[in-house]
Image (tube, rainbow, N blue to C red; front, side):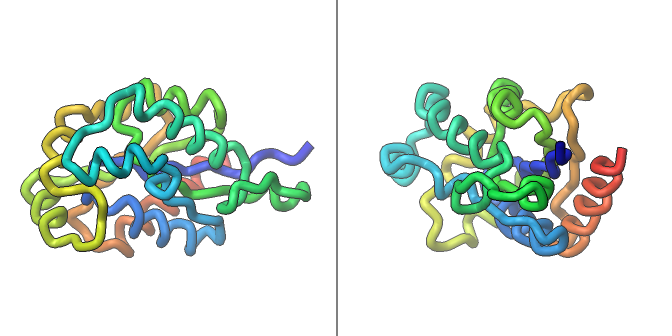
Length: 183
């Protein structure tokens, strides 16, 4: 049986760079990339667009969809049709703010590892304010920071400060992921 490839979740609060870093990690590893924001139901997007934080009840069906994408499915959600495809990995950008959310993802995809992007709240706030065209308003950053439960020592992951440029952050994550996958 072919060993599953890594499922990497690039996690963190809004404006930490999950998507841009995730895309770069996926490009370097030749894996498909999925932005979990694209999996939110319209109701969730509408709430966040209005500055209303999501509840756990809002998030659970969404997290289940994200978990399905991590469970060895391609970016379009199709199950890989060959052993070679199944052995490749996937990179998903997903906030995964709470331990219970990460546990829910791992329940569907046990081989999931996390790259937790962190940063100074002022840096993150400045990034959020400079962002255009995103449904998540900068005002929700504070609620995300309050909700965030950092990776536990027993969770498979790497914590990276996003003060450095995207290429450096992605390279550190790729090097770690490759070492982790070899072990």
